[in-house]
Length: 276
Image (cartoon, rainbow, N blue to C red; front, side, top):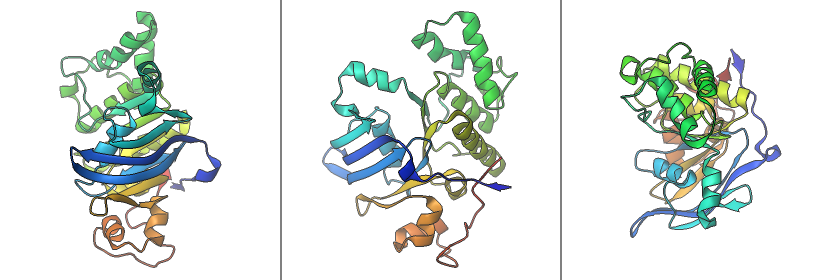
């Protein structure tokens, strides 16, 4: 099994820059002064325990929920200060996979994946059919065009959701707990797929996850959210965080209470970060 080679973030182009973001629900402040950068080509993990604000932060990033304060930059454009037309252009660069896959149960896989192409392009029907088959083949579902979501396993539905998220060739993919509810084998296959897509299509991927196996397997960059501190308390490659952090909450999360072994240079406790 080959070790995944990670590029140095400092050598990469910033694609998302978050500055002074505050996440709140009414008067309740969840996180303050959130600052981080996502570089082109990252598989960027937003991690933390339940209720830490992972999914809320993700929604701020892809334009579903405005922050209480702070800015999200896509390149030089401040998304939440942009006009609706500029925001719409930015959104065309996004593909989103929600926890449940969000496929329309009354539509076949082909119809589900064709939907954004029909809504946002002027492509003829024949070209849309070809693109749909191509996207399904990319996620290992070639030949399943006429299947309905209910006829598929959980892992296959997640892969179909990824195919739909990629329908418009986005350069940014946002995944909310993609391996949630999957058995270990299906979760591993999904991790491998995310790595393959990132490397072959040069796509930047932002993933909300609390699954340690996935975090260590796919993450090239990450942040840890601590709701008690109302802050990001760790950032960087997950393996490096594990070997270097002194924060007991981060250590406990990344080892599930088992403790950090052989520091520094801690071997990943779950499985190697790898790609095919």
